[in-house]
Image 1 (cartoon, protein in one colour):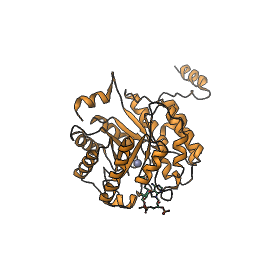
Image 2 (cartoon, rainbow, N blue to C red; image 1 turned 120 degrees about the vertical axis):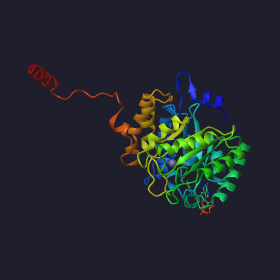
Image 3 (cartoon, rainbow, N blue to C red; image 1 turned 60 degrees about the horizontal axis):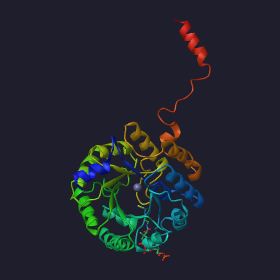
Image 4 (cartoon, rainbow, N blue to C red; image 1 turned 45 degrees about the horizontal axis):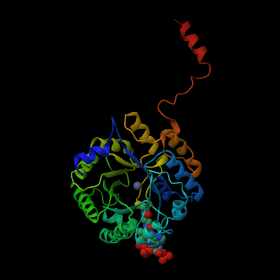
Length: 331
Ligand code: COA
Ligand code: ZN
């Protein structure tokens, strides 16, 4: 990617434009023990669309035995309202999933493959080389059908079983996918192992790849409380696209200790305060996030859903006038 392309992608007038991609309906709900009814999933995606998010990962066309929570993928993707301008993406693990996603009119395929051999075997039951061969077939099918492809690279910032992952491996595999002709690459911190200085180094190394490298998306989980710090480090290093999940839902059923993604309304709230332009309606997001506990049957991590925005003020306590009078009377 050349500097001019990056600048026009990143800047919108005086306020720097950031793109927040919602993954809660997939990365979040895939992990839930209770099945969220199909009509509630559709209503959730419709609320996210109405909040103005530019991309929503709606569901996953994996095997329903592997991820039963998303076994209604076709119905959800077919029945949502499609807001012009929003990209409705779906996770696709193999050719079978791609065929299902094409039938359901996915706007984009999100492919997954881990940088870690152990995590790839645990999550997808294949070596990385086997995954790559299978995904190359999916990319060929997508090209035939004119569907753009994003590849989410799991465990870029560390693997919970192998430990640190060599940066060279991250960059080599990214290169191989770019050579296949994919339109997007997401660098995922699947289990919250990333830390800010590492994020800067990875983002800078990714951006230093050749001119044809698509803008990278960063995908952080807040497992160790560093999610927002990592987002800010990535922005400082030049990144402008982030995955996040409403309420901070999320995880990976095959990654021990995984917990939620960075929370959409928390990062939109922080970034807007800092003067960035996300194009998202924060109030609509917060309203949707507050409906989540009833949907999933438990509290969600979002602090903003609990505490409200910074300037959502509270009335002074009962008896305040008397307190003030007494204080003033003391002189
Ligand atoms: N859609 C529906 N069914 C699928 C499918 C798809 N995309 N891919 C495979 N299947 C079915 C097969 O038909 C087969 O069904 P059967 O047991 O009734 O015959 C079964 O799943 C196993 O198929 P197989 O080809 O042996 O695949 P596998 O067991 O090696 O599984 C994956 C491969 C990737 C499909 C599976 O491991 C999976 O979906 N994992 C979940 C990965 C994931 O989404 N993780 C979280 C996101 S990071
Ligand atoms: Zn994730």
